[in-house]
Image (cartoon, rainbow over all chains, first blue to last red; front, side):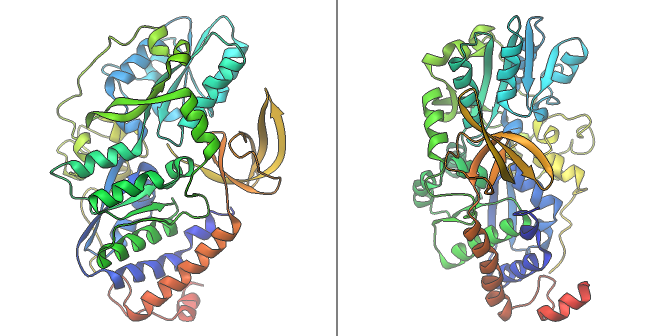
Length: 368
Length: 99
């Protein structure tokens, strides 16, 4: 497939690995922000092929993983209502709430449907005027233009039976929170290429400057990730801290302006709770007051549902790069993808699921 | 969740006042919203996330990236060893072995 296979070329990958081995003289800790990158790294064994001095830690960029438990419980409460058609991307359906997941609600008679695009949910609302159609708007800046368009379209079409349960989160505040922590180990970031496709990379300039960290906007294929690591290590070794764009074929400095414009018209930035990490300011999106009628939390009055995270799951530490999945006592024992205790084991992009699925039960890196 | 894949625009249409299109992903054809890439033309590749094109793939940059990978990595590798601590084999020799 054009623009995919050539970026999976093993010869190029081998050359880049040699390049990385050549420029590396000291130990460095690099975080890949996005769960899609984590998955590609583990699936391709990139972490095992790097020189031992390079440690990759897996970041919080998995929206399924960071959606708080209480938001899942709110989704379950709404989806259980008789008048509701509850729509969601497939990866949210198996995420466990306090007592069940969306699949269980479906098996109990709830009308839960997986959709490919948020516009499919708008179409369902148009076709079912006597039902309430709710879309679970989860995701980072990559997904926000899609859900913004869904609300915009619902308004244009005068639909009064479409609402969204909004749980959007933003990447730069999460990176800032990690860097501000006294426990931070991250020395460079591979920024999430598709988030930057929408937002561009100018908002990372002050972060790179303030915390003196290289930030490399990176794609998702093995060769992209290796070049991102190569660029990060070169900066670290040379004592530079800049924002560079590895994913030039897709990401422009200014991002996608029409997408940003619609996000701004529909959503406002505010405080949001991240599963396992906690609440921090300016880290999420919610609907602007003029779109309040499309807010499922208001229509179905779920704001009173609040729950605590189970204490034995260490997904918060994993999402901050402070622990590796196999360092958890429950990993592969009480906690597996079939019976997950926390969201990092549920989502296929979660670090725990990636480690489990690719049999990464210990640090079995190739000796170099 | 931020998964997005490249596909070729083969048809541009309009639906409820927004620009939509048919996208060919190496043989599998699906519909996507093109409202965020208003300047797109038939034949161009776009990056599609959950039914929305978010960027037009820059063909020149893609080519340059691949060429640069080769060059930069070659230069660095010329001085070094491979990741297993063994001297790097010349490209032609490795090519033969892999075939």
